[in-house]
Length: 115
Image 1 (cartoon, rainbow, N blue to C red):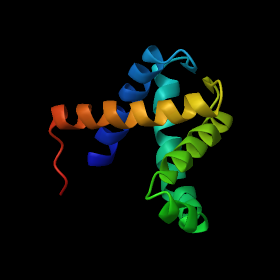
Image 2: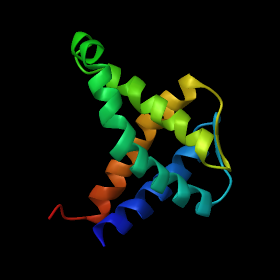
Image 3: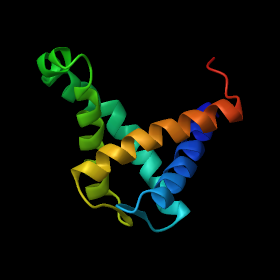
Image 4: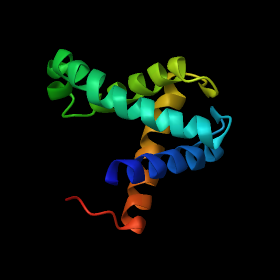
């Protein structure tokens, strides 16, 4: 149940973020739900591999390279999800930051417990 709530909150946060950022376009809420699911799968499968492969760069930049990895994940999701478009790397980077902030605020408002 907690996973479904997290998906819904992430989808809503993606919709809010797409309204705020002109370089990101999401066609509908269903597309946002699919995007949230794809992002969850990519974060589960691809992100750990990218983190291990780029560990020296991540250590050298004191963890700031993780923002680049998040932007790559967003760009990969844009290729996989129809109806979701990002205009470039810069917009993917900004979208990942805004999505993290907005979903964090929404999760704190929703009061989801971390059992």
